[in-house]
Image 1 (cartoon, rainbow, N blue to C red):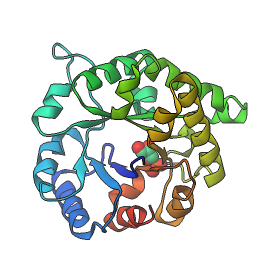
Image 2: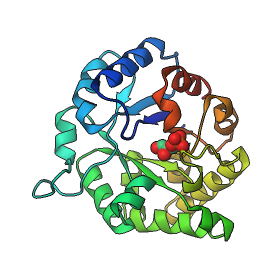
Image 3: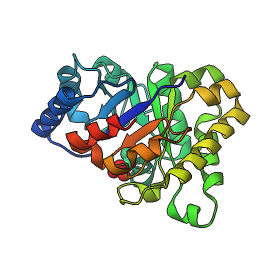
Length: 249
Ligand SMILES: O=C[C@H](O)COP(=O)(O)O
């Protein structure tokens, strides 16, 4: 039985005081759920967040990490630095990292290998652009993103991977993939993994949907059989909205 997961990616939002307020609101309002709940605050607030949530079921995760062990990479954070502050899950491959920081499939493949070597769980993001969807290339694009970054991994590595399908055209736009579009793509992703590896891996992997998930549409999206939860941006910045989304799973 694969895990249900709701993760909030706070991106470059919330100062220290706002982060503390949101964390304590979430800890107080967290509904009883079997789903794993995660939040990814900004780097400068991670240590505080880990301390604030010590007694909570909410896991603090990182928005990014570097592939190198250490060295001259100004502004970057290593896997060991995350482990050192008690964080063992990192988002890798978010479309904003790909678009604004030039992270290619090749770079992402290196990050995934480093994370897994360090026993860090990877929440791997991928998804097509609007023009890919319009031209009907979306399945090909998604397949090549998966293949280039993940399909050199050994089968045993997949127990430490969670996938997040995020069509770029639905991120922060208010435009959501329909539940049917999400289901169609998630089923395709599962089949692609099954063909490359085996059905046990394909059926065991959690595939989250991300892109304008809100309290009003979460239930319908999460009701689809191949959608195992969500990676939530904007709506995770408001405690009541994020809690409503957690309740929807
Ligand atoms: O990481 C989260 C995704 O980019 C979705 O963001 P959004 O919910 O604001 O569309």
